[in-house]
Length: 538
Image (cartoon, rainbow, N blue to C red; front, side, top):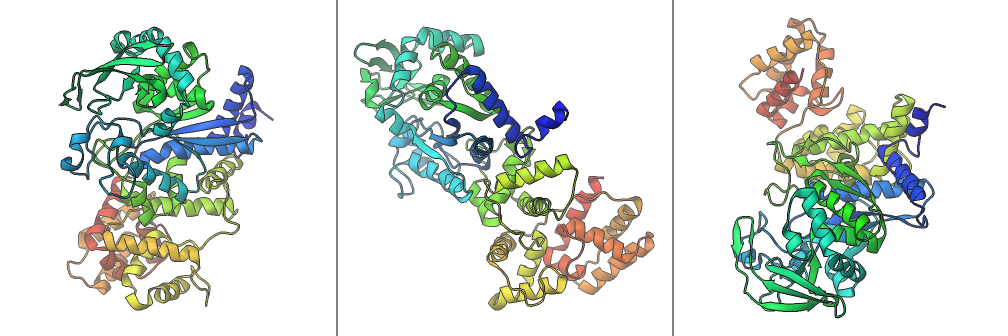
């Protein structure tokens, strides 16, 4: 067996299996204890969690599962940064509610929704809810509780005692000289309650006291005036926190973390913390993997601060948790644009993976192994015992739109039996009922459809072009049907072949309902735009 084949066939044949093997090899080389290999993800608490926030958890969890598959004990640590200060009022919340709390630790800010003990708890609970829905198992740590309980106490002492080395590392890596002059620690001002306005300038290692002054700070162009108070804080009290440019390293050592993925937007912080971990804390930093951000269709990074938040909760309204994990796990590198209209594609793609997993579809041995592995990780290594009923998302949305409201499921079942997706007298099971619910939510909220990529020959391109040109203005399904027949005949295509092409583009299947009524139900403009996009991709 060649070296290349040996690498490909590690575990389930995915990138996550190869990464797990690299972690194992490195840990053995370092001579560290192998009884528990922990992975970590950061849990934001400063705003509504977006789709990308789940990426940390999904990827680190997949590595943790791969480590278990290799025979090692592993667990995912979900570390919530709820001690951080609020830097900006998130989109969707009014300035009146939160602007006065800018600079305060998010764990000290009241929940504007009134259902949690703090703003930080509310925001972090949304991502924890998403992890739970995806079946991701984790051990939760709240930074606020970690500082109060002193779990980082030894690391804080070592970092403050070695602050000069910390400052030099920061300067060498990013040219910032701030920490040459001040300690890498923010005290919560005992007078005004601000966090980021304080500057710590001295540490007494015998008393564990940090001495600070509240001097003010500019955050996102907004100046927060410090109260001028000079005070001291005991690091054991939990009334302060390490800066990002040292906190990662502290928690890596305190929690014995061996792997953490990270986004390219914090690459500088990770690089700094790697050095601080090794050189100041004398703890070899964990293995890493860098991933790129999700962008919206306008090319902007999806983020809390950008105001274009696309939350996991939105995804779960229209698609399954497994389809969301597929988004995260199918590819590790490269930037991807994303919006809600992509959800049907991932639902259909998950069905294709299921066909591979249950050997309904055969690919090369290498690709078969990789795709089966990805499917299992989408189900957090607990895949179903038998395949589900696969119905293209757009077809379900169409049927739901056409169904009488008082007998929706019966109508859908009858039509699916007619189209061959269900056997005669086969009822709708729990899985299909959930898919119908997703499609119902979609049809209520959206008109647009997402086309499937299809390679078109010259005849097909010409036929689609003619169809678009001659699509009737009147809402007459028979005229639309006849126009499709004419476009096929005029361009040397058998009508059945052209219908299969259109079905594939519009609903990801080779058959479906009569296209005339379907075009009207989905909206002629939406269908036209989908076909135009299909042409433009050739």
